[in-house]
Image: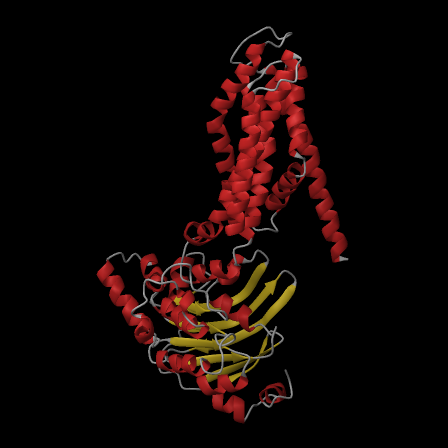
Length: 256
Length: 240
């Protein structure tokens, strides 16, 4: 395991999740530390998305969602009744597998979370929008088209825009839920470069079903299978010297 | 096994909905027949030509109520779709009421209204007209608005929630703008249904009173209006 230099941003202890009678996550325990990319790999339907949706409480939208165990974010219980879900959602940004730009201009898309935080001054919003778009290397491509709809952008650019929008919420953690699913071979490296760039400032969680991508972008990796965290450790160790037979079968392509 | 359980629970919800609806409607009709909230207190035995003008008077008075009923229906749809979980018993029961009432053809409601006004009450009350409009418009408007809301991709809502938007903000900033053209079309169709039934009502009363088939021009106007509004609303829906 990587030696933690700080307290963990996220700490999960014995997390179990059910949707109705379906036990989708079984006794997960792991830490996520700042300034590193933690990836989760596994075949489809293994519980990767259910896991990350637990972390920013999107699963609360489902009526049959139940959980047990402990999830701590910056030392506080994420599921405590005292926690403000709105604040949590702003602190834990999420990028979905499909880019979802809102039906408003590029500028307004990025300014949206800042407005939610109560920032109203246009000069302040201008700075935030420019900073966030520069962070994802999109500013040079769109600064002339800020008032136009994001429909003019390519899928890859739209995904970069969604990352910029998440950054405008001033998050501590960014969760990427299979962000390259819809991107082509030329756009994927750009997004991966953005992930590496953002690593210096945020805790990143990266969910993917592409093994090589996880090996490229992450520092720590976890292998999920049938809702169980089979192995969690250094990415290099997971891919070169896995301790579990299932993990070895998955990373070598014999499984999934 | 699961399918059987689902069917049984659906059957229970349906039965509860039908029985309570029937009791509610019977009570309501009895209540409205007792209330003599009438514009023109004429003899209850003979319908005079003043009755027709009373209908017109009531129709004008009913316009704010029409708007209220339509807006209330839209509010109920948003409440059902955005605030209630679809698996909750409250959603299931309300959904059954609406499903049953929405399947009643508008012609049946119109004939019911004419029948009750002419033969049951022998008077035109504000409440009986309002009840007709509620029965005619509310289930249809709620159902259609629900369908429009369901077309909004869940991912849009989730993207907004993930950024820290409140439920109210998600509805007003994302769901409503997406569904607005469709809601306009629903309102148009609801208005055309009201106009069509109002025309049927006036024509029915006119024929009964004057014993002739010289239908007044206003009835033709109302029917034409209904057709125009429904065509416009279908165009709105088509253009999205």
